[in-house]
Image (cartoon, rainbow, N blue to C red):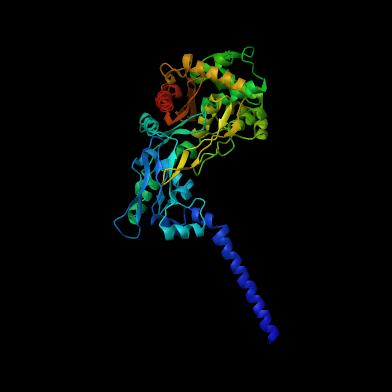
Length: 486
């Protein structure tokens, strides 16, 4: 009997020990993961019932704040004074939908949990102290507003960066949404608002800037040109491509044609100015699959850009073996079609990389975090993400892009009185539809602003090119960005 009791006691001790270990795993090791889970409504309820830090634009405009309710289940409600203007940046803080955007990335700071322990929380409760912090963004309200107003009611996206620091200056997608209604403490109203947004075929919740990929069209020729120069396959003076209206890659009889059936060729500056498909398709075949893929990846393709927002999509380009088996696809990819897709953010990073001497800095929307006494507790320090090209190659591509603005397809991008660099793109979708693209930066010699614009699915006609449709949008944003960074 005593032996059985001892065995039972030992078994109970093992079970209690296992329970103790599991409780510690849940409460200590996994506590942050459970707290940060946007579907953890218990954490949401807890955070709704206490003040929460503000999200503030670079110019001091309040973008998100908590205000007391008039009673009910929640003591605080979240409101977003600028509404849809910053919807995809701030995200929402919602009982029924969790958290997104800055509200999710910097939840610990906003909720006052950054670097705290349970003992800290107890002391805060007893002493009535608040550790909530305010998050200041890199985006000036006026630059974001110009991006919105310039794009208008056309589906698409505008991204602007400071190439020197990686700071985001504009991050706009249309359509957008107002986070206030989804974050309402009226649960029924919040659920209805969310259902309506989810049912909208235009998908306002989709942050096209960094969560949607597109064929980049001829803006990708900047990557191809960089690959040619970096590998030595292309010499800016001696390498010339024959003047032609079509190019037939190896392993196919189907030609690649120039836009509108035009005839073009020549040296690098000549073919970039007029966006010569035949020349760049041949360049892609000449540099080869490995070089083109390596160059694209050096700009950030096939990776998730480290933007400090959740849900960032990578921009895919096909693999070397696939290209080596299918040279025509390689040729099409070299002109931004077929086996490459890009987010607007990634193409802005391409422009920023050339602008910054070949070095791509880590993109970010957070500038600093301040406590309730106004003291800076965290400030973003610029850091390099990837080296895309040597300074010499980047300077050559930059000069070629200046030529595109001065004498080529991007004349509408020119900022008055400022040397501007750019590259247009018109990504063909078939059925007479195309995406209108442009990337660029200014001032060309000492860039402070890099931009990428896409306008989706424009009716396929000569009037609907990147130079005509996207360039005026980018020009307005460049101008606003230059004023903001002066």
